[in-house]
Image (cartoon, rainbow, N blue to C red; front, side, top):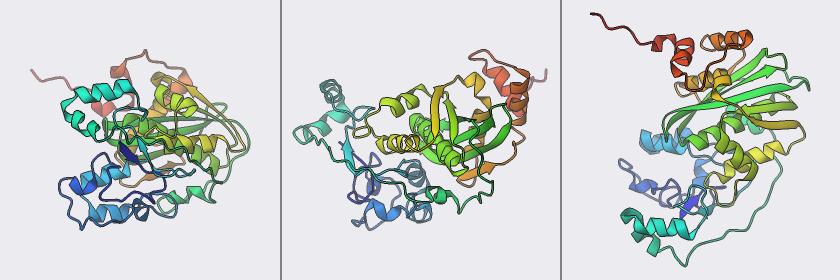
Length: 327
């Protein structure tokens, strides 16, 4: 079984295996390995206390913690998830396959008979100023918008899976005009966790800016399916899924649609800016220079065939063009 962080009040920071490997077992960790709870490393705004974390653990471990998703807009208790299934749900097939695996087989013999089904769940009202976790990074000064419909496109990028990840998003008017964009650095995440975090961040910004009629588009089939039907009690990303559902349940008009990467270039560019940031979040009131070509392409109706990565790369990142070898 793998421990999953909810509010962090029951799990110990150093000794429990919520990061897949107990932190005290990670190379380079020098600590007293006391029984401090995970909740003591979470701020009042439900964000990781990165200053404290980076001061106590090696950089690679800190980046993994930074990328670990914790609930921000909902309440879940600490619980267990099935380690040998991507959905966190136990099945005899997953157990049998794990038993055949030399690395996992011995672990399972101590697990059978102790599978925990946690059925308790309590919902809670949103805490005020939930977007405050970002306010110490970027000052949000844009006035709230009207109830006119806006389109939100989100995307993610990472250097590996899992790897250092970034997310980005763009808000446009019904006529396609730029309203604002964002780029954010997440730390080390899996691709699905990054896709879900991009959507959660985009929705929280939409709510903070006063948008009340939002069409959210993402080229992330798995993430959208998890939002629709994922089991929050067993899935490793249950807290993140529940956050998005909590945002969806607010008093506004919100819809989700899948889109293809070929028509999601603006968000893709912003997400690539995200994993190179020095701060956690940047709000773009005006289009960054890297995004302008994609905006122009949208206005002109330029489309690329699926898989045409060369044309895409040359348009948005001209510096990536391959130079001809001198003869």
